[in-house]
Image (tube, rainbow, N blue to C red; front, side, top):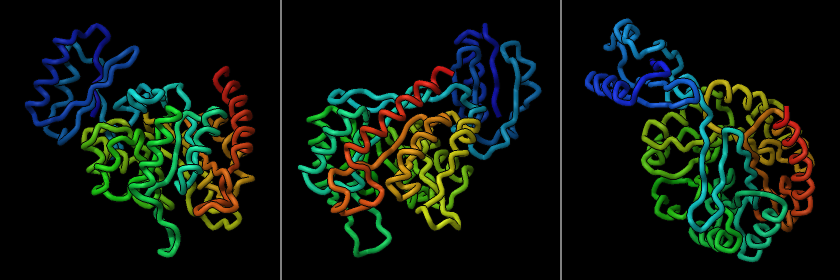
Length: 340
């Protein structure tokens, strides 16, 4: 249930209503927009008299929310959420609400030379965050699984040199202490419905990038985001990275309709990963351009200084030179999209 307050409602009047609602064992989420303030009622709202609330002088309207996801619903939070990423040692980056970000770097952190070389190159080309896998979930148990804690240390070295906030994937809640200095924690497609992990991420105050599962619906993605937000962490961004279909020429099928649909359903930023979505480097640039054209809030692109010898996903990784050309194209499209 949501309660929309009138424009002239004072803070004292609003607090009185909130205190009364909490007395009914209802949690209240406050969303302040340019025109109205919306109170999102969370809990067993069947005990609340909607007609009574609607009759209050300060209330403009009361509406029931049919979607099972509440806190990430645009009905609860009409304005776009803007997530700030980075700390005092990095350049602060904003995503959402008109702010656009590009996350770039190798699929897997391999060596100090590799990650530093790529970090310098993607920053020079205009990327705003550095990605790199330290813990790598792989289909085969015999494939490279990542450098783990040592990989995070190498990312932190690159962060120190370049000032770029870093993004890396978490596999297990037990690893959270290792992620203390990671700026944006990624939840991979395979862990999108690892609900125990999502609950733990809801307890921390750090931005989360939640990737869509291989066969997950948009509703399931939003429900996973709800797990994190229900725990108290509202700094969540969604990532469309392709879903499994019957097509075999690409690794997955990039669902660009999800960008517009998720924006309609939710206030959370939407990132697109054309690298994992296609698995083919020649498709990364055109799909990145298409994602920008349909209004995504950011991109995640894999870049490797030597893709042919990459330990992970070399076939979908751009060289620094290819990434630079891609950035030039998406910047031009972004300028057009913003001006429309």
